[in-house]
Image (tube, rainbow, N blue to C red; front, side, top):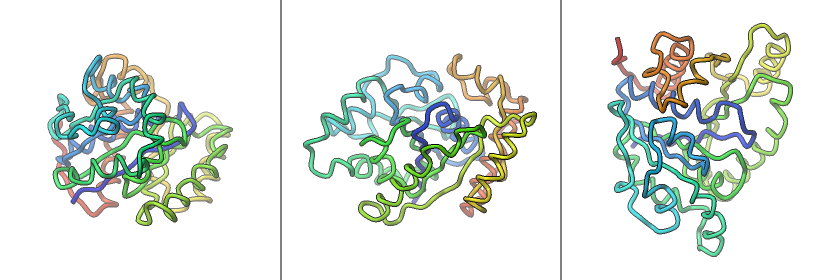
Length: 260
């Protein structure tokens, strides 16, 4: 059985989708079978992997009960698949209100897929609504990207409280997979101060790898590419490769890098 990891932070602009795309690609390049589930109505993970105007999507899985296996799309990287999203997902929270067990919709659908993948990464929307609750209920663990800036800890207590509520009421096996510092600017004292505070709070849950601000990481999605296809020799590619190594190691797995 594979492991499902939700990538969650209700604060936007922290590198959540960038991490979902490039960690997924890096894991695949380490010969890990990886599925990316785009749960964000903005569908940036979908477009960031080169898919636009695609149908059906995760909306059809959650609301219309379609078999997710029929929704899965293969990317140009071997071992990396995606269940895409689109703007119609905005209506899912309203349409699911009257559905019994609405918080469990994603879990019911992705559980059978865990037999076919080593990792399932769920890119949650920047909110703590029903879609994010589904992402947390459907996950074994949660990866939290935190931007190394002044408001990094703002709202984090609310997210952690939501995680605790999910653990208590809906998913007792949910754990913190790790905390990832992103958009780090080595020139700023504040970035180092935030990093120290995060490490004090989360201890060994903080990844050794820190994601810096990187132009190539920002540019790649506009071309519908992950960082390894866009610029394999960039700093962004290097750090996400290292992050994948750390995730694989922490989960007791091994893998050989495919790219030369």
